[in-house]
Amino acid sequence: MDLLSQLREVVGDSDPSEPIPYWLKTSLPNVNLALSGDVNRGFPGGRLITISGPESCGKTALATECMVQGQRAGGFSFAIDYEHAFEHHHAESLGLSTGDNWFYKKPATAEEGFALALKIIETLRAAELGVTLPASSAKNPSASAQKLRELLRGRDLSKMIPIVGLMDSIASMIPQAQDIEYEKQNMKTKNMELAAMLSIELKRLARDASMTGSTFILLNQLRTNPGVMFGDSTTEPGGWSPRYYASQQIRLRRVSKWYETYDDPKSEIIGDVVELYTQKNKVHRPFKKTRYVFRTVDPVGLDLVGTMIYLGKNGGILGPVSGTTVEFDGKKRWSIKDFDAECRADADLRQRLVNHVMGTLNPVENGPVAEPEDDEEKSAFAL
Image (cartoon, rainbow, N blue to C red; front, side, top):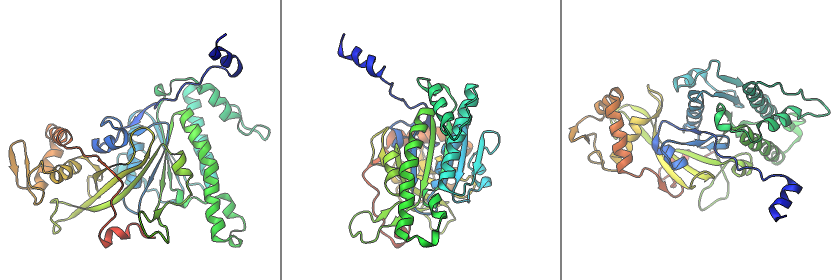
């Protein structure tokens, strides 16, 4: 008997490697390229993903884009809102359906939120499989989870519906221990409780996300790390567990304002230019960055046309880098505003613009996020 046969007799067959069951393709091909190396992919399904950044840099909008893509693929999305600040009307303007394929909870403690998330994916997968899971008891509190793992072992998760869950945010999670004798605890103890809780809960969440084909997006804030004189002085609440268990660790920051006429500060501000940087990536090469336009004026959200104009103008393939003119298709269009409107109205022109920019330029760069140079951008990383 050969060695492999002996091993199988003792420990059973080798477990199969878990492939990515589905991809959450965003509406921006350059962002997809930075995340997965493929313009037709994006965020990996069945994994933990963290998105961090300063306030108002578009973290929730990017996470909402993932939930929207999950719904459009016939899946289910839900949000665990620790900040108690999720705005449904704004999310709907970004394309999210808050009907039958949507669920929303506002837990009081961190542990309650993680328990709700696990119960949601158990219920959804059991309903899809057409089975009734055993009820948990004091003797076996994880009976339902164990049974579901048995049912899903070896199953092709790509044939099941996508499940996308949002947790907003790590910084606002309240560990259950902090509700007990809160005033008697010092600040160091309070901070350690959050990190200790996450080091336990994220282990379970990463395992169950992979085994059930569920995607979890955890948002986080930035804090200033006192005493750091060189390099990145920012840190994220919750300790190091999120960066260990996440398959992708994304950081966002605003780099400039987005004007109605490109670089004319006298025109109306209609959005921001955001830089996305992959600090960790287990499905593609890490340390990639790209920029995109996030509109705050109708149409709200990740802006494909604006992003292509921004990349093309900065790359010098849509006419002079400075100024408000655009040269495309052998024509000189003197108004970026008019060109933007024409691209939105004409799907063929819009697609030709995307093909021209993505086929001519490499919108993804290497290296960490550059240090902000002006006071406005430095303030984005302050407490």
